[in-house]
Amino acid sequence: MVKEVNMHIEFRIDQKLFLKDPNSSELGKKMILHGVRLMAEIGFEAFTFKKLATEMGSTEPSLYRYFENKHMFLLYLLSCYWNWIDYKIDYAINNIASPEERLRIMLHLLAEPDGKDAGFLGLDEKRLYRIVVAESPKVFHIKNVDFEQGQGYFSGYQRLCKRLTAQIREINPEYKFPSALASTIIESAQSQRFFAEHLPSVTEVQRINQHFDTAEFITDLVFGALRAS
Image 1 (spheres, rainbow, N blue to C red):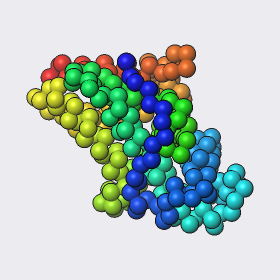
Image 2 (image 1 turned 45 degrees about the vertical axis):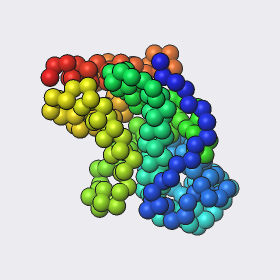
Image 3 (image 1 turned 30 degrees about the vertical axis):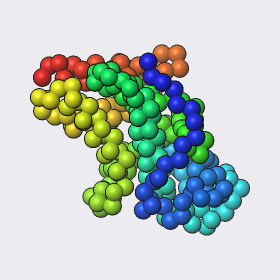
Image 4 (image 1 turned 135 degrees about the horizontal axis):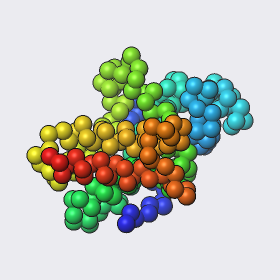
């Protein structure tokens, strides 16, 4: 049973991701709220600061005071999300003795993050996760990825991978590919959700009522791999 988290939490996001902390002003907070709604609705390619400014009733130059471009804005949103998931895991597995149960909880939170409030700036977690599923590959598959990795832009994502890796090693220290399995867990949770919505012929994952059974798939995948080794 995964405990619910419904509280307002503020995270320290890497300062390299923004020019001015959006959490430091009402305009910045409004930018994040409206930006998540707009990007989730129209997608990263169609998203522009000009459209966001119109949505907010503000001006385009005022938004460039916070972020250099929309790529950095997307990186910021993804960093917020990974920090939030990391916090939810902390909260949910506290006092859980069984390593296997801790991992099951972690997999569920990664696969079904459908809470209403993401705990910071009042963000809708469903919309934010929609952005993660659809847009996160675009921050990795770029020519600049090595530079951005060196700048620490993906630290939240990497921290979550390391946490999963440690949990896998605790269950099966002999497993040869814990880091590869950890990153596969995260990517599969996203890609299978995407396929279920848009390319259903390539996956058995499906929507059941208001949820997807992605958690069941990645749980079978992970524990099957650990048992087989």
